Length: 412
Image (cartoon, rainbow, N blue to C red; front, top):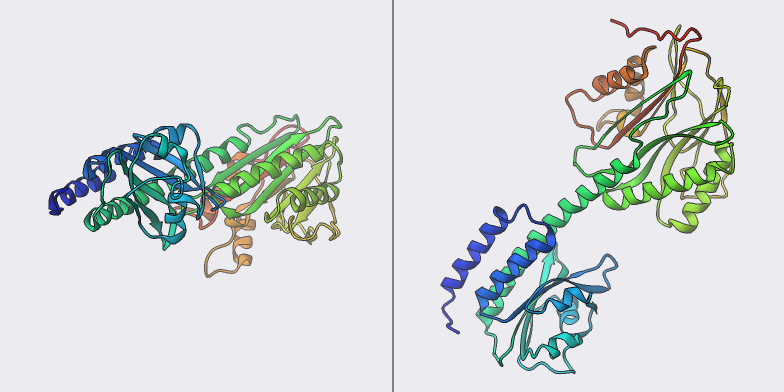
C-alpha cells in the first residue's frame, strides 16, 4: 500500500463530514455500520469491527461489524485485558498482529474466518478507553505506522459519534421511560380533584422525579411525590422500580410511615446505592383526613378558602436508602371541603443564589383556592415563567371539592 496518505486522509475527512450530517438520523448500530464500511474502504481491509465496553467496564461487547458480522450476531464478549481486543482496551494503545493464532487471539471467529493479520486501536473518550476498533486482512499483511495513525483518527471519529449518539439515545430512552411511568390520567374520584405537572430540568436530561395517585381495596387513596437522586437513565429506572415497590407495599399497610419503612428496607437490600426523598399521603375513605409521612422530602403546602396557603409541618425523616432502622413519623391533616394539599419536588423552589425559603414564599403566594389544574398551571407560570428550571419539577395537587360541588373561582 502506498505510504502517501493524503488521499486516504481526504477520504477520512469526508467520513467526518458524513458523520456530522447525513448519518445524523441513524441509531448507534446503523451509524457504526456505515462508518465501518468507510474504514474498510479507507484502509483496503476485509473486516472491521467495533467493540464497546459494557456498563460494568469488565467486558468488550461486539456492537458493529463488517465482514465478520457473526461477532455481533453471536454476542461476542471479550474480557478486558484478555486477547487481542482486550489488550488494546486495557493498554489504551494500538496492537498489530502480523500473524493471527491461538496465542494472541481469544475470539475464535477471527481465526475461523481465516483472518491472517489484524490492526486494532482504542476508542478513547475523556482519557478513558470506551471500546476498540479493529480491522483485519484475509492475506498476510504488515500494517504501517501511517495506517495505524489513520485507523486511530477514524477511531476518534467513531468514539465521538458513538458517545454523542449514545447520549441522545439514552436521554430519549430515559425520557420515554419516565413519561411511561408517570400517570397519563389521574383517577376520577367523586368529591375530589387531582392535577399535576412535570417539567424536565435545563440540561434536557431527565431525573428521578415522579408523582403517583392510586387507591387500594380498603378505599384509601395514596398520593405520592418522590425524587430519586441522580440524573439520566439510571435515575429513571430506579424511580420506576421504587414506584412499583411502593404500590405493592401499599396493599399491605395504610400507614405511610410503615410504607416508607418497608420501601427503605427494599432499597437498602435490592437497590443499593439508590437514595430518594418521598412524601406519601394516605387519604381516608371518607376523604376528610390525610396521614402524611416524609422521607426527607420538601414539606407540602395546604390551602383553604379563607386563609393564606401554609406549609404543613411534617416531620422530616431521613430519605430512603440511608438508614432503614431510623424511626419514621406521621402527621394527620384535616381536609375539609374546599381545602387542598399541594405536593412538589425541590426543583420548583430551589434556584442558584437564592435561599429555598424564598422559593417557598413565592409558592405560598401563588397558591389560592380554585380548580386544581388551573392552580398547577398558575404555580408553574409564576415560579418558572420563561426560565427553565435547573432541576426537574414535579407537582401534584389534591383538592376536596366544596360540599355543594361548586369550586372556588380563580382570582382575577
